[in-house]
Length: 470
RNA sequence: GGCGCCUUGGCGGAGCAGUUACGCAGCGGUCUGCAAAACCGUUUAGGUGGGUGCAACUCCCACAGGUGCCUCCA
Image (cartoon, rainbow, N blue to C red; front, side, top):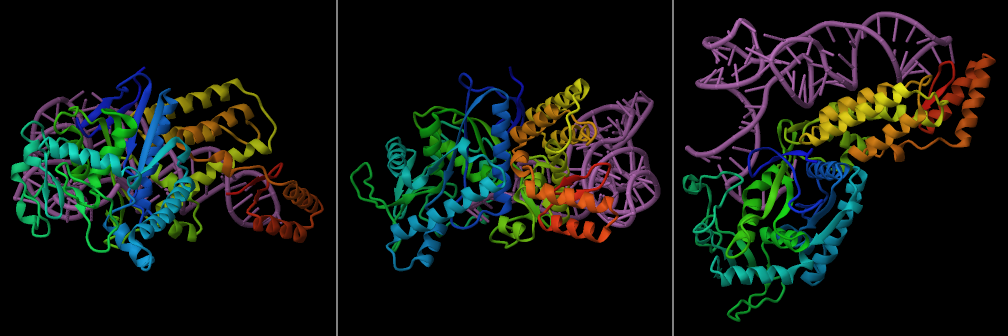
């Protein structure tokens, strides 16, 4: 049953997906560095990872999804010291990152990602295993000790393996001028730190090199992911996800670390990378100060799920420009879906085999679109059509419920959660307003309409009034 | 300098060599005490120049513009 097709950065084409072993899909996503709010570009990456997992699950696979927190690096150290200048560095780091882990998980939930289906792991919980791999790489001669740390030796690695498989980097043609090498004590420009020796005031873990030399310090960035993915998923595993910017050097380096020496040749079978969310046509980045966070959006009255809709409106492999106008479009589309979903609380059932079949058909087409390299724009099209089937006077409520559940399952739009029934009190106001209207007491009717609006409820007058939150 | 990607209507955004994408906005209408919503209908496309096809938005080439990675980065 091979139905899922995915663009694989390893092969540079859309491939049929099949788990390496049995029915289980082992998937690793590069998670956030927890030193601040994620920006909405970061979040979009995790939304795509979430719908990939949903698609695999709805296709009948069991998915073991692991995501890491990078909770020790230059920025977390710098900012934790700033926040807790009087704490010892290790305590400051732990306190500081704990806070932003919580912020991150909270925002993940807000944008509709199912964190219960993800196993989260932290770099600082895996120091011993990281040190073990550092030692193995040293013992096998593909790493070397320098004054400020341990480095991976790419030229050694290249004697037996290919470096740069994903990015198809022409190693020898790369312009070395661009890289200022003075700062580090590495032998070749592409070599990268796998262990960084402690500097003054930095948190550090004890570490003895294979020859017994003490080198307290902390792990390099790339090696965390190598260790945490393989430790939790085995090697090779099925899918590695991340933003397109991680292809080089992060993922190339992960591959190198995990396939060096006598390790297996294959690290991860599929690499799935998402394109960036842009602002004014340019990459959103913290250094360029052109990013938005989720609170920036909610402060303006948008629901985090409006943002999810915006993300889903474009394919994960095309760069999307973020703008308030397109967020409005996404919001309106979502509100339309909500208004239809809300019919299930307030109209009488009109069983219809035809409607049932049509809805089922469209749900299957949407699922099919998702299985075709996560074609969310087309999936949304089919779901739009499905919602258009239902009108107040002709709604098969079973079919409608099925659709609403399907949307939540496939896209994680949390339609059920965001469209509960209104309260008996609300209904009473609606009845009173109907009464007033029948008496042509427009002043009272309008006042009641305002009261309902204050509760976030809009009344659509027709033969029978239909309420909605849109 | 090296390796890539993109260019569709007012905005966002797909597929496809010949038949309506879709959403949002706009416009017209139905409904309505009014408003909104909902519903029905509808206008605006495919960077430029070549080429191959009976036929190109869709394939090929060139050019222009934009943009990403090559350094931490989703």
